[in-house]
Image 1 (cartoon, one colour):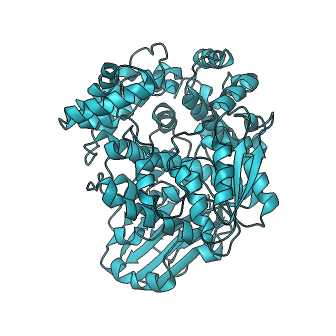
Image 2 (cartoon, one colour; image 1 turned 45 degrees about the horizontal axis):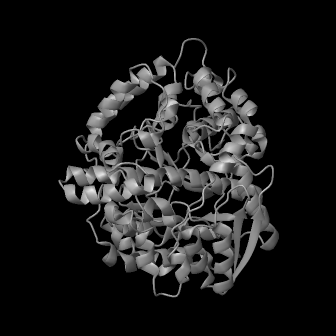
Image 3 (cartoon, rainbow, N blue to C red; image 1 turned 90 degrees about the vertical axis):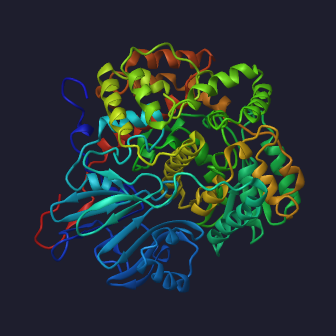
Length: 633
């Protein structure tokens, strides 16, 4: 990406994913008797020739049929064996979407004649990647494992897009590794003798359903999502905000739940008060407080990379790892392993909506409704109605491809002074502060990639909210996968995030954003779904407050500023590739130390990416075994 020798990570990548990345799946479809390679410690998937899982428990890999008509699911899938057997008719008909409608979060592998479909989930917890060779196609849920087949390097431009935009689908099928393709959100991988391609199976926008009609569907989907994970395992749950409290109360209807609340006195929120009151009201909830300490701050874990598991993509949870470990330590003391721990991750993304939906109301000519909503948002933000509408108006006059072309033009200019995101115009793809930290060469390459992406954006949603919702979910799904690796590697605990399940996403996002995000009520969809059901106490459903971690973020930034400056300084792998430059990072860290507004999200992304690159470099090995006479990579 820049002149001079590139760091090793941008030359070759061979990571020991069978040891470091605990769970992944892979398969080969092509000519001859076999691919000549198999994943280390891989277990064949029943009924699916040349497909394996690595690290998945046997009861989480189930199948029906074999040969030219086969179906397998990997993960938490609510379909029983009889349902899987009946679903073979849907496989025969190539009705792929029908195979994604069961409760839970799982990967689907299906064969109908010569056609194979590999289907991840809508939130990227089971991502799908592929690469083609002359004799066939490899697929995997791990991009790094596919890169390790021949040492394919990290793609600096794709990593730049990850840092600058935070929206996984901006560059479409481009993964973080060269020669490795990714299946975008809402698509599946369809492998046929003539080609392998990503094919859309989920509509870009859902047919609108009003909030009242959607409420019982949301309640049923969320209840099933929790029930499918409980079983006979020990259950624990976060008990903090409205989202996690809902999951804890649903789980408690099936049996005992160890509920934990992280209660650092620096947070100054009311999560603990609500948690104590909820546990005293709801049967089967045993409440435990996790006190904060000097070490439970952001960035505490980045000084010791050996204690962090290698993930397949940069994970924002490396920033908050010490806080998550404190919670998991408390859970581990009180439950036997392996247990399942529920988190409310993605609740905000599906149950509410950012004020960007105002741009859609203006686009559709609903000016009176837009004005009423803008008034309410202005009161919440203590600003004027005019300023709220001015932020939304530019996005209402453009579409996704045009916005990317405008963004490309901005990237070719000299970066200006940093302005907090809340003060910038609403955008289809907001440009994060990290974009201003990159070298001109990298910004130019990223601009070129954006122009290319704009020319291949057919099928993009018409509404900004539809695009933003999906991207938020894909981002949260990837981050939650990182937390799952931390929990499994360090504690043997399963992380369950039901708000990321396909059916929960579909039920919630069918409600228009202006109904989910109406500022007059806090998460009205959840209240409509559970009021009068006895699942949640009334005082929980009427809650209008939400905790935040800003105090711990600033405490971590202040305490670990020297570590972060060294991490992102002259020896940084990101710096060697031109993905960050030292001066703007130093200025941003100085702002944080002074208690001034800071681009926290941008710093999180940069730190997580730097940690990821260093881990890939430090744990070089091969993920594949040689099979037969063919040489392994």
